[in-house]
Length: 258
Ligand SMILES: [Zn+2]
Image 1 (cartoon, rainbow, N blue to C red):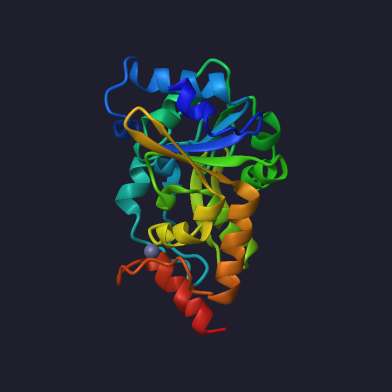
Image 2: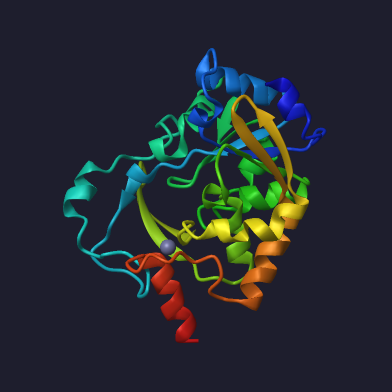
């Protein structure tokens, strides 16, 4: 397992990791073994540890925000306060939650879009309520890489950072915190259409096999540049094709309205 990660030859560069544990087949020790392997090979490891259950739907808010205002009465009652100790959403995968619980891990403070990391203090500290992807920006400046472990570009959070840089419309969401409900601007669009960037970044990516999984490493600077160029040349690039996708449709409407 260590050998496969070392083959990527990322030296001491920080990595942001997205993973599907099941893609590896059977691993003795499961997620903990995989996290230990990552920490043994890479100096600095970050993963998204997002917490969607803190989200509240308010009765009203800004237009074209792809949210059914006023519909949240039941869901709002189920919402939980953000606390640094609440588990990452199951959608983030068991590996992210395992990293978050690691004794040397820290977590950034965004009530919905927090990141967990080991030896990633600068990147984690960069995040603010209004700049949730400042952590990615910091990793870009550190010549970081994205590691996709048995997953594809549809979970590549760093593409959201590039979307914002390209000027793509962002959304506002609301989260329950111990200090009350907080508006969280800079919330990203939908990532279901991100796989269409794959051919554009193939030539910059490195691949290895780890267990049964294909592992892909993509340099963040290149990724961001490629995504920004793609959206600048086609403002509707990377949107998904689901007819009822609220966020992708809001971006289309926003664009058509100029
Ligand atoms: Zn979509």
